[in-house]
Image 1 (cartoon, rainbow, N blue to C red):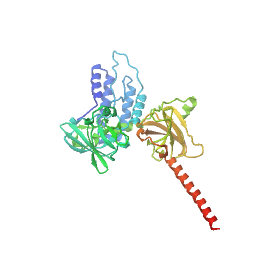
Image 2: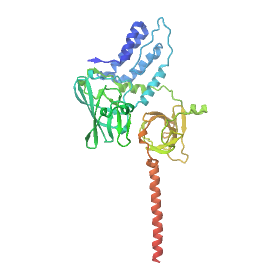
Image 3: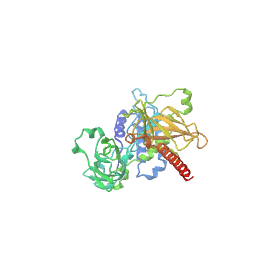
Image 4: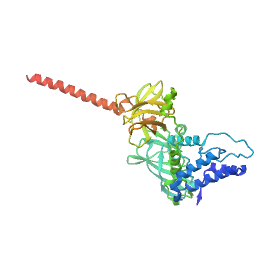
Length: 418
């Protein structure tokens, strides 16, 4: 049974060997040992996985000749050779961890640092497989992976029949492709079954979906998790990506400015909202929030304001205890001044991908800044009357109308009886 290390780790290991740097070699060996100990098939190593990952970060900081920790690949790239060459400047270990945390918070599917698992590493057979979708509108309720002669396909079942076709690529590629390349679906009650080619497990796979209602293609990303297959189906041992990701998130680089420092500066950075083709006005848009303890929530659909072609959201919290929000380094204060639930207007800087924000709450006494991720879904944009508050207003107006009409009718009947 082999343990597959990421290509960048193997390649850089070879580079270090030729460079002949003792410190670099020792750091690489420590990192490689850490990868092996994080594997799921060594359960005894799991309890201290977080400590080991953080220890590796400390090693990276000590060996300042290291070119980078946590790049786009798995765990580390190797150190630059210090012998006979000038040392290269680069971001600190803390900055690199901060970038890794940001990558994790913004990612729509998958786990940080995943290494693709190809068909050559999976035994022939049919397996149930766990799949993540980047969109709640393309929710996969069940999937089966078929492997034969190192080729993988998947039967995915989605919870509706809203999509006419799927395409193994981006929406732009689907638009340009002939209809004969589109993948149709089979009906399964109210559900749809699509059969898709799978290039690799543990890797975001592009999958465009054509909406019957809106007559257009939408980009989707799917990740098929190798860890959900039976152990005997894999010819490799997988690192514990969840433990690695948890360790990165547990380390706080303290790069986000506090509200006090932002307000003391007396300036607000103008963030660039996304541009939309809709006319200026007020609409509704679905928003999903993750993070925090789960006790607080925001209303969805929420109010979408398009101003000069730019998108802004008016968020309404389920609590009155939020006094400010931070988006990047800009602070937004509570707009509710009547004691009602906290409300904020923020720019929507991205559609269909996570936007990291911080919200400060006083619900537990002392102010606490809590990290959340907001995702706004462009295809859900609709009329303003879909917002719960607007619907409630309509109900009140109708109720008031009924009461008034009933009162007038009652008065008329009484007068007629006299």
